[in-house]
Image (cartoon, rainbow, N blue to C red; front, side):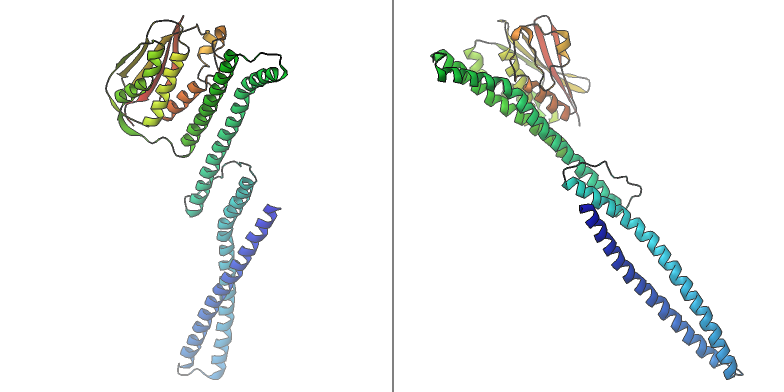
Length: 359
């Protein structure tokens, strides 16, 4: 219905434009022809020896030729005009149809651009808009899917315990309340991580990261300092060996990456050995690594651990909903043009990421 209305509106506009231009073309050709006719007749009339009969014959002949010329000129002008107006209106009409699809929530294929002109610029802008809106919609849908997937099991567990307490099947002990409180806190952190992941995906598709030259060593040291109290409480040592280097990056985003890797190392550490954090320049990249010891990770899970919804279930080490932090790490690092990965050998695990040292 919308498309039919848009076509009718386009034809109405073309019709008015065509009639107006035909009138203008006709008036110009008519005035020009009339002026030439009158001037030629006057010139012939001023020639000595031309009688009235000859004058009339000349006038009739000239009028016939001018009339034929005017008709042919007007017809040719109209044909050329219709050809060019069609070239202009067809892409606009196509763009209107695609816009209506976009309004309905559909994401049409990109418009084909043949020539470089104002209309092609408009079509190119529409293609960019459609692509970005599609990426935002996909990101929103992934956020909804991830939230439903990650929250289903823990919420079911909490609901089961609460129902047991309500019916008196389970005794309300401090340990149980403490466990439920920790689980609800973990869910809050999970929702926050899901939001951050979606936010970084939208930033990547719309504006891109805002890079400035920053000292990566200072950023790493600031992140380690944020964990100072937790590290002291759990008696965990962190060895920091990083080289100073100014590289283009989004400081808030890279702080999030380092924060997630340190939090991951602290949470799943199962040995008394210290956590080692290193940073060094290797050719065109700055490499940051966080090494710790934990439960073995099967080889088949090594390549998937940075994927959303992916977690290692080895020895029930991680529970449902965890692993989003590593997906955030990969998303941010990829936005910077770098890469992220895991090197594991037995119980020793080294998470690493790279950042280009120049834009």
